[in-house]
Length: 285
Image (cartoon, rainbow, N blue to C red):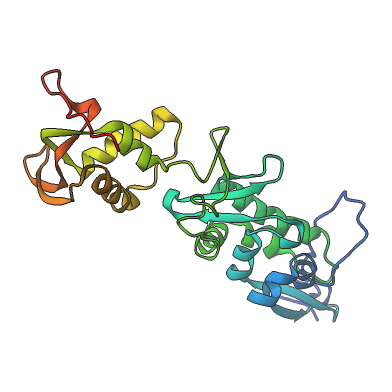
């Protein structure tokens, strides 16, 4: 049967894309769901298969497997690592950062969201290379590796892999490496070190939460520590200041703009004191 352009429509075929592999591995999975299930059986058992499947009969009468939709939950879970190999990735919300366990230093090391996106992208590419010829790999190579999809997976991973706020502190806390230095979980937290070393009693002092965080951020940067996000800071520092100076948070502290703000009276940042002001010596604990 001839089409409008005179070409026999029965001879028109859509191209079948392949992703060549230079690997010597002989294993070929029948479809992408089988490929991921073999590598991450625990994730499949908990969150379901990697893809919603679709099938299509091509012009030659052969069935084609199409990975139609990516399962965000599954891919967020596999970013947590393979428990059979001792791999582990966590999300630490107080710092808004991912960490992975590095056996070389026996500690958790920070990693970036971009690296996690690259990991998912690489899994998809490897899968496309090792699946049977009946698989339509277009989505594996192109659509699912776009930023909008990878960002969606990483966002889901933040909730799925979120660790407890005390993950890196206390007797059961984990060691971590920050800026090349191993941090012991029994060491004081950055906000506790800041209050101990940078906050002083000052009879006429007034310190807003905003100015306190600004000075805290500078203190952490100079000390090589990672500050918690601004949203977490107030709840952390309020308790530390109360324990050290027996003063509570107020809502009527004059700010630099003349308006009342949250803060404390009777204390100040050591770095903000003028030469005429002098801190009150602390009573030895």
